[in-house]
Image (cartoon, rainbow, N blue to C red; front, top):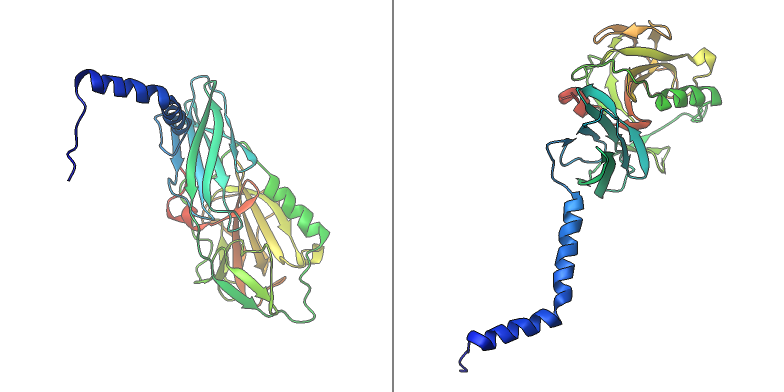
Amino acid sequence: MRNTVIPQGRHWQAIRKYLGKRFWWLGVLVGAIALLTATVTPAQTSDVIIRPTSPQLGDTISVILQTNDGTAPTIAYDGASYSSFPVGSNRYRALLPTTPLDRPGRKVIQFTLNGEPRSFAVELRNRRFPTQSIRVGGGTSTEATDYELNRLREFREAVSPQKFWSGPFARPADGRVSSEYGIRRYYNGEFAQDYYHKGVDYAGGTGSPIYAPAAGRVMVVGRVADGFRVNGNTIAVDHGQGVGSVFIHLSRIDVQEGDMVQPGQRIGAIGATGLATGPNLHWGLYVNGKSVDPVPWRQGGFE
């Protein structure tokens, strides 16, 4: 067995000098990796708070930034830009939506804070959504009218600077949950591509009351008679700062456009109008134009 000789003195110094010349590039590579890690980091800092730290598909990502100059930063995320709004002294928040159609994996959140470009990485986790088969009668139209599409598009794109809601959202109906958020569907045996269930359905008898889950301004009141063929009788409430709720398939509407509503206020009743297989309330929650999972908003809120 050969003995291992450890160089000492001048011989070891010469070897170290030789290796240093030959492998200088290794030090450059290590330095570049360290710089990249410092530039894009999953860690939080004293002036940046990102929640949840490990989001999954359908979650709303909250980004809170502490500024020195009182300037509201604009956040870039997944190819889109999002405005931030004041939530305290020189503190601003942006809400970033994710959906079941997003690609999971590493996402980078970028913004300029106090004149310095910043980047933070989050890992958007995958999530398994169930499938459901729906049978629709031959005489039932599955195509929305231009009128209802345009009215609801205006609602989804609304970004009011004022924040009306406060704390976790309340349950909008008393019945059991009959369909969860994110379900993929087959209609009459045909898979609906690029579709997911954009809300939570609550079962209940026709005429059962529904309630505002949070404060807001009624932005849309749509009725079957006016052309809401698929959604049926509809109420859309703007909660402010890009957050809004939509309630469809109603049998009765108890509010008017422009009304301010409070949490727990009765705003209508469960029905089966539009494209519905039976009496139920569909509650959809939108953040900056995209349908997100309402459950985290009920469990903890985004204060």
